[in-house]
Length: 80
Image (cartoon, rainbow, N blue to C red; front, side, top):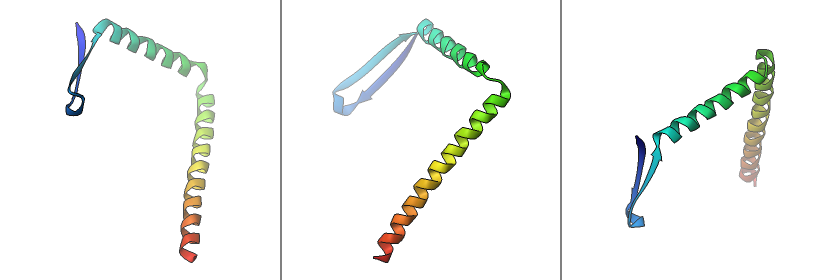
């Protein structure tokens, strides 16, 4: 059994067909999920909570900095 992916764009002058054997697709998926579960098992739940907290803190800092900088630029442009 094979998985077919067809992509046709009028600008390219034809259709491109990609045939992926189903065994290759399922094997890649199984190995990917095995890697994900292996990585999840490396740390304990409290370590994952710490990593998630640090990541969320950094994301919050970055987003606040970006929007404060945009607000500052807007206010300085408006005041000129």
